[in-house]
Length: 117
Image (cartoon, rainbow, N blue to C red; front, side, top):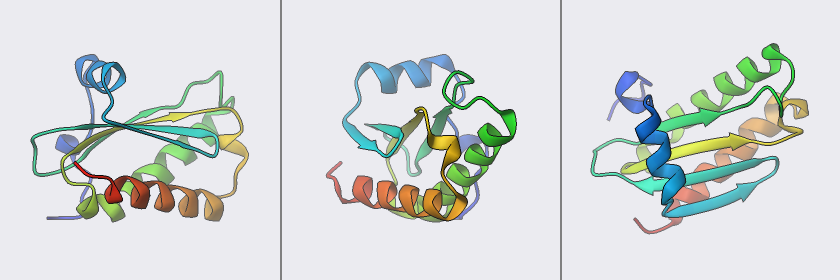
């Protein structure tokens, strides 16, 4: 499996997001985040992000979060095969430093990879 983050590894349509929100197989709360995951029948994981302006005010912070989350996902995707994942940002996530965010999402991906599909 390649470590890229192409279009096929993203949740793009409202249908994809609704499917994960409607019936998540796994829910992992984190520090200022919520990870919802649902099984898929694909040979790769897919990621969707919900980072609202209400919870993270500045666009600079929202974009930084998206970059860091996508990068940690890209590095851990070989352990997450078969999941559709939605990350929901909560208040305070934009105030956490880069190093702490990378550690936090690394832990979230490991927790998800340990759960049974």
